[in-house]
Length: 419
Image 1 (cartoon, rainbow, N blue to C red):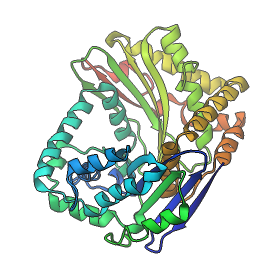
Image 2 (cartoon, one colour):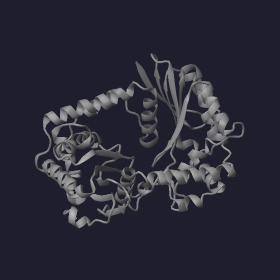
Image 3 (cartoon, rainbow, N blue to C red):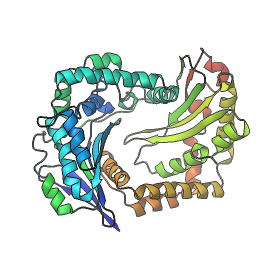
Image 4 (cartoon, rainbow, N blue to C red):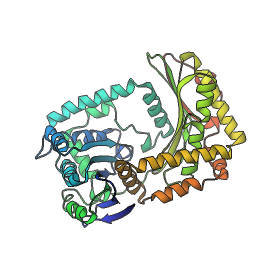
């Protein structure tokens, strides 16, 4: 059995804890509400840059010592930056939880942001940008997301641009961290076998160097207008992405759209996979995905096809959207999608890191928690009527933004008649 509880430390930091008595490990994560949506065009990528620099040395540890101190306890440490938050985490055996957490907290409080290390890490991030540019599927996805959220903070790239990175100095890093890494913007998430009272006592004095609070911000949505873009690359396969508006994480339609996504392109038995790959033989990889954030969301369809098969693939996608619009889904499809979604969720629940990630994300972005029973019940209660309602979000071809990464300039008007 496990139980989830939330405590607020005297310093103002919230701690969400899920104790799991039958495991011998624990995962610790510090979630900070700092990501691409909080950046400007001038400092785009600063959240991601800070995440990298946190591992480059503190007042008492070099970069090598940070790594060695985690290796000494057999831990696994990493971090990631998202659109809305950054997370630093470590997974250890239960006996070493405090030792692993202490390294993360040292980085959070005492990172040096050494100018020489910044110069080296800037080069690393330049290479990361090139890597994304050289991965046409990722490039298509990122570009489609930018177009769907054009004019909104969610449209910003997490990694920034070469131009913005050149303008990020040590002063910019330090000022951004001081402004955004505040105690009211931090959630500590812990899952596994540990003593809650003891661990909260360990944490209590660990955030004193951070400012207490920051000014809240409201992000206004702009009107969505479908757009089309072609990126020409010397590649062997074309990558197409269609995207339209979806729903936010706390939208009552979230589970219905997630299940519909599974039916449309989330598995090998999905409609898009069966049509585009199995029946037409046009693509090795074809899928759909539902990306939801705290304030908005988007639905994406992707296919990697031969250069001369873009039109055929889009025709197959249009066909499946029309079938959905006219006929909806069957009870058998919905039941199968529910079992797949519940299985995926339950498999994740068997990993302490997955639980830590889910709990931390929900609390920092939505200010609430979801118990496993709540999640399963939310999946089970989705009806065919709910699917019929949410299908209107994704079955209209005229609502889609289109991106193609291919080897030559193409005319969207000729291949996507719904413009």
